[in-house]
Image 1 (spheres, one colour):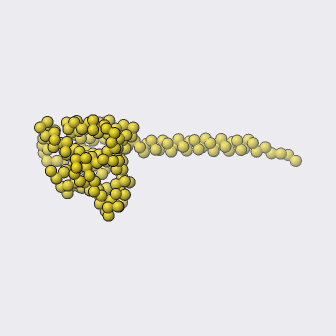
Image 2: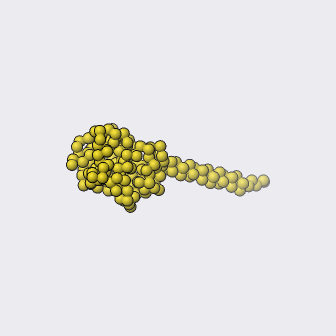
Image 3: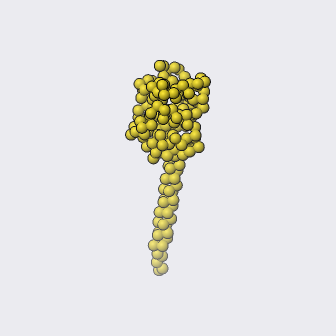
Length: 197
């Protein structure tokens, strides 16, 4: 009776399984890395960088970055956090009444500018899933307290879109979700949010 060795087929199977598993793992890791690095304003926003280090690279946020610098908030937004920043794009600032941005950027208006900018910041890391859970728990609306002490309201607009309403009743859409940072998350919005006063 001839004995057939199962060692070679078994070793070949184990190698195939191991290599295949390693390749699959590398594919999953690559997918995770590409999912984490969201492109905003033509640049990859790296989750290993802080809010400021990422924002300065976005061509869509040059006005916001200039305003943050003028208000002296760079060190704050480079801090430990975590922060959620609702970050208006340049076109959102351009849609404000003529002269608004220039007026806000004047040194004499630093306090007002700081108030407007910190109205766009909420303590904590509020990604899309967390916002959606808060909205559901709030019966369709989640009230958020900003670093400026004002209120914002998050609401669902369809199954996959969240809007943010300010104290004046204006509504901004989140256009790019979950741009993770080392010290929080950026939610890109299409309007400038304004406090009541």
